[in-house]
Amino acid sequence: KEKEKEVIEKDSTEILFENEVIAILSNPSLLKKLEMMERAVQQNAYHRRHLLYRDLPIIDDENNKNSNNKSNDVNNDKIDSRRNNENLDGNVHELDTERSLNSNLNSTNNQSNNSANNSSTSNVQVLFRYYNKELIQNRAVTAMAWHAINADLLAVGYGKIDRFKDINESIDTGGLILFWSLRNPDYPEKILRTVHSVTSLEFSRLSPLILAVGFINGDVYIYDTKRDNDNEWGKPLYSSTNIHGGGHTDPVWQVKWVTKGIERIESLVSISTDGLIIEWNLKKGLSMNVIMSLKRSNNISSNITNNVTGNPSASIVEESNGWISRSASGFCFDFLPNDISSQIYIVGTEDGSLHKCSTSYSEQYLDTFTGHYGPIYRSKFSLKWPQIFLTCSADWSIKLYHIQSRAPLISMKTTGEDYSITDISWCPGNSTIFAAVTANGKLEIWDLSISSIDPIVLIDTDIDLSKYISDDLLNNPIDEKVNNELVDDLLDKPIDKPLDKLINKSNDKATDKLAESPVNKLVYNLLNNLPKRELTSVLFGEKSPI
Image (cartoon, rainbow, N blue to C red; front, side, top):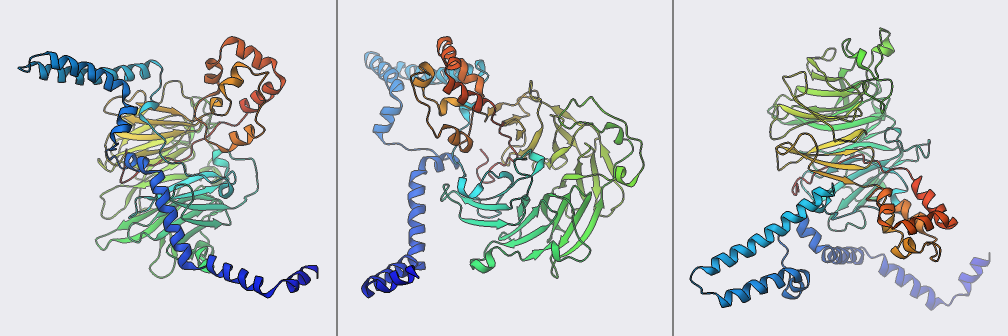
């Protein structure tokens, strides 16, 4: 009643003015122009990063060149002064050569210093960071997919799932799909909220506006991303919940669009830990066909590990022939490239077995590969050499196979790293380069033409306290006050280096004081006990593979 009285007491001119303001601010034309202006501002702010992303040269003005390359200019001036004193018969070429040698020596020294410090991160830069705390709300990134035509658009799925040890909440709080674009890296282009956590997604190649999504409860949805109506945006075009006879009953870990035959008819294939590989057809609505029911093979059952993250050599023998023990859980698959019929594919399972299958046979495998002793999280064929494929597993290893060879051609494991490899991705522009991510927050970039023993780049994305604690606090930990928002910032912001590097950075006296200070000791213990970042997905840019 009091609110109604206040509204009545308002002057009629004020009410008309408020209505006019609301009408102006909600004008679709104004909102569209503001969005275009925001994109223009963002593109201006991220201009240099866009050039680096697209591998284009950065052209600076002379002032920036002089400020950024001051040391090089000093050396070049010395050489130029010597040039003026020399005869121009043949000494000019020698001095130019000296200048190029100096630059080469500088780059060589930098590379040697990097290798001496066991750090290969100098060649890797963080260009864009797609993150929004209010939207994500502590959900993990579970899947990523580039748009088939718009190479600047990235769809990212979020959820809370046990596979990546995100067990802060046992209740499924719902999933999220954010459509990030380079035009505005600070906020997604579109937001799609889902009832259940997202576990997999992929854009259609023939119909790029169609997005297939797999969920933790076993559902498979197909969305039309072109829809702009708020009432229709969150509703899928097709849903497996309406399919008679069910579908998946466990999390759908991978979905993939597959094109078959000369007619280039596209269908969707999904895999789940319920042991089923299902093909979804969209000719007349949504229909399903089980193309494989996974079962454990007799020669692989003896290699099942009793602990996924433990020592791979610790194995148990399972002799039970019961139905439950015979069923296998699927994690990943990939179809043989350049196969018109799209019949041959490989499947990675939870027990570490790797099978070669055909869509023509739903009850038996064509062949079984050996080598892994833990769950296989990803398998991917090479686009440059279709007979070759990679696999990564919880047994800490990455293996390279040929489709005709049961044993792996190469087995790779980073020296000193004993953590699961959660995802891998081939580089589209180079047949020997691929990337991998690990359960302890490491990004690895391998080049088989250089080495198959260790990656050429190894980036640790773990905690770096130096970003959040000032040098004054390290040197005088008792005198300085701790920022009240320190812990909150640490939980929200990206972390790059392990905790030990911070302690080594400070001197012994500062370290002793840090241990003596109750406040700083509390902060230190809080940060030291933070969970390690776990990387779950990796992708190369299709149009910018560097």
